[in-house]
Image 1 (spheres, rainbow, N blue to C red):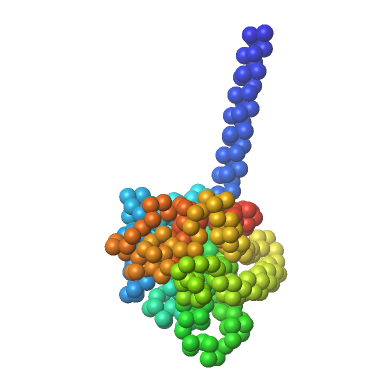
Image 2 (cartoon, rainbow, N blue to C red):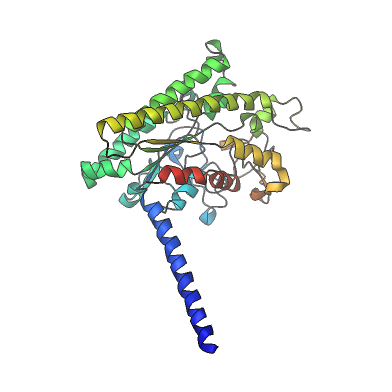
Length: 372
């Protein structure tokens, strides 16, 4: 009996060790399919590029970054990590995605990916001019500059493979509506909200086409959030912004309609790109463009209240939470004691916990996108 028990124990240990090795192998295989992460967009994915831009749209000061290592404000518009940081870690690339404009980046950091995003930017050319930030076409120019730097180290063929196997993440569009169309009257003189959405989407399509031309083959594109639920939108557009705060569906409805058309356009572009690749090079993997839904998960966090661990869903953690963002959320601002109980860090941007929830909600999409 003792011999049988010992054999059973050994077999269990061997089985557990084999299972662990299998899981590690699967995870390594998944992560090794991605060579780098490249990020484009606005403040939702800007890790500090605006630190190096002459703009008021900055967050390189407390209390921003209070829950990062050493409580260091890096230029991220949150209390901690962004969604792209969680993605980079999940892919086994790095813990934090650095800003491309940081002059002190090492070759190793550059090799595994950077963010070109700039807080306040958008697809409408007018949007970045309102806050003097990096336009999205300029972000693409920085990427081309980056490629040349990579070619000088790897050579042209290896650089092409590196880019083809990289993960591209695009998050922008909210500023085009919230900062631009809904706030400044210029575009409203020429467009109603529907035709303005089409105008923005044409710029989206042009940008994705340019990414594909530059070698992007795995592209994740983020839809709009429930814009009427952003604390700053509630403050300026609610009938009773101070005592009965709730989402303003008029603006969230615009996001829902925009996201429906966006998904259709992304699907059409993927089919078109795949057909072009199959015709020109049947051995190359087809293009993959995935829609990342943040509307649904964010709406669930807001509507679920305590069920998802959030006690405050209609105002930010910083200051009053009604209007504070960027320089208005500063070292003199009152800050809530536990940001993890808040969906929003300031009046616009999610907390680290909310970003993590958004990452988890879309992890299956990421897995499908990076699959070989």
